[in-house]
Length: 413
Image 1: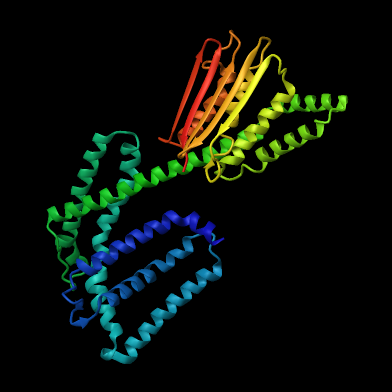
Image 2: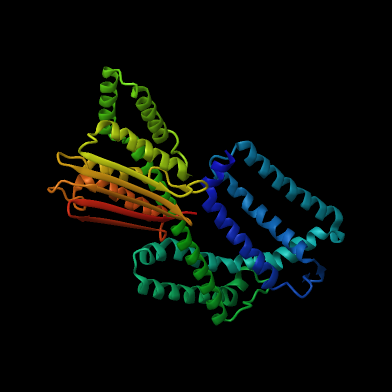
């Protein structure tokens, strides 16, 4: 439940954390009341005191917004509200009861008014610039590939925001809080630099978030393709093997039980053992071997020669499940015909390099590179390889002299 709630509001939480960090940095180093040694108008506060007081203040100011979050139990919201109200009432009572001797009035008046309120007002233009960039400029220009317009717009936004910030503290603030004597601590060019830094940081953060979202989307796409692959077990394969089993059983062939067991193992693997993102390479090779043995039972071995070679120590390595099966299926789908032919599958693993080679005869009328039906399995494998092993694989398809070959190399961790 907590994990689901965090995932639901993680964007809002990240935004809040970003501004909390920003408030603390400005409050500690750039606020008007801060002197060396963290003296606040002769009130001696350590760095940890400043950090604690600043975050308590932020928490109190943010506490009402908890009511905007759906999914949080009402008793949690009421508990937080009651805690904040109790703390404020206690502070008020202590301030009145202790008078000038209490540290609470000093903290409230000197720290909040002289420092925190100044930082809060300073952030108004910063927050405005950041969200104008995030909500309007990035989606409208940057995401659409209009880089020149975006660069011009974001530069103009930084300048306008800097001038607005300077104007607030130079002209407007004395009319709103005349007793506080706020002035801008930065020149306009310094404010432009600060605004630009915020815009660059938030733009980079947005691009990283978009990249992360793209990776998650691709990952989900791969999962969905795997689920679809598992759900779409070739019905012809099942039909042919069931016919084979029926023929063996009718003849009283002793191999019937073995073939049923092989088919059972194959289906169990495809339906249940492929739920993980990675699977032992040994297991994947074993299912290829099982698939080949099942196919041997139904084909005419006098007309079609089937060869399966494996070489190397496959233990310890892992691979994406059901990545190789479509390539093996392709061999038998197009390698069996009326004339003599052969199907050859070579598998090798050495020094983290995995090699998968297939060769099969094809009918003269077929062109597997352009064949719509025949190319679906290979195209799906290509897409999955690009998503799961970018820069770590090489897939070569070749067709000549009525032979079709596939060479796949993957660097496995």
